[in-house]
Image (cartoon, rainbow, N blue to C red; front, side):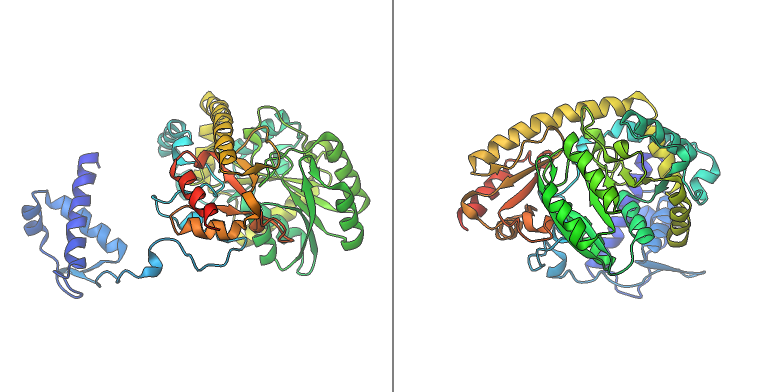
Amino acid sequence: MSLAETTRTAEVMDAIRRRVTGRALAPGDRLPSIRGFASAMRVSPSTVVEAYDRLAAEGLIRSRRGSGFYVVGGAAPLTLAEVGPRLDRAVDPLWVSRQSLDAGPETLKPGCGWLPADWMPMTELRRAIRALARADDATLADYGGARGSPALRRLLARRMADQGVEAAPDQIILTASGTHAIDLVCRFLLRPGDTVLVDDPCYFNFLALLRAHQVEIVGAPFTPNGPDLAAFEKVLAERRPRLYLTNSGLHNPTGASLSPQVAHRVLSLAAAHDVVIVEDDIFADFEPEPTPRLAALDGLARVIRIGSFSKTLSASVRCGHIAARADWIEGLIDLQVATGFGAASPAATELIAGALGDGGYRRHVEALRRRLSLAMRDVDAKLARLGFAPWTEPRAGLFLWRRLPDGLDAAAVATSALAEGVVLAPGDVFSVSRTASGFMRFNVAQCGDPRVYDVLARATARK
């Protein structure tokens, strides 16, 4: 169907929707005949057939054999709960996710964790989508294998080797997303009541996901060089956690990087206390040069590496991966089959492999690093003028972790800003101990609109 035909079909659909919402067509009423409506709309009968078929698929109308199309029901009344942000929701580890994911296009999201769509490699994605349309029938229609695409796993193995992580393709499995990868590892290694160690602060969805697994969560304070080693060792000795879940490269939310000295000590302590480390390395491509990776130093002996491309390629085309020691892979595969019947979508993995397979993605990432570096300096300066103080200066990435001025409470500021259509990320949603109420995480790529700073100025002035 051509673009013009698609547009005309949409116009016919909109005309019917307006009649239904305006009560010109009530539930049970018969729609105009195909030929009559085609004449009235000055389109072909086939365009009206296509429009009616699509409206039927939406559930707005229904076909009766030999009789025509009828309205199923009018549009549901619009309720206040469907308009605007949820101001009454508790500010908890799901708060930023829910507000960001449900926000309308007019909402500003400096608290979210992803890039704006116009920062993504749309040319490479569209090229990969055109190539995907020419893929064989099995890629477009069948389930994927239990491990996932061999071609993408080989590509990932080569990329990991560039970061110092030695993993054979058979040590890698593909998952529906990075979050799904962590969920699988938790299902595989944890039982309700087990203890898991996280950084304090850490990525807020770690806390939400771990609570869904009904485990005990303990935190070790995080410093600009990694976890506080004295506190880390104390927690290992006293609480005996099963897992340590962390970002070692470009930590979320602080943007800090793990130092070599701290990395070696973390691995030594984990070995002494028999702790498995899950290293979420989703921000790896944002680094110009890789900082120490626990998976690289450990050789995947007790470190499981997680990754995905939702931050640099597309959050719409989801695919994650797990790299782990060989004797754990079969168990993870069985668990993935039991809970998801196979690995990531073959169509998604084919598209990702296509987008990664030429030089376009490499050039995109290099340009992205430069753009983020400029944005980080610009946002840092603007926040400083509002009284937000730095905790550390990240070497790369998306995030700035900043202390609020004058001892303000970040949750109160975020709630106030939300009423003006700005989603912020208050510190305590990242903190298992709830000791980060004076901090806030900013995504520099989402802070380009001047309204962000106007709203921040008002929200901080009236608290």
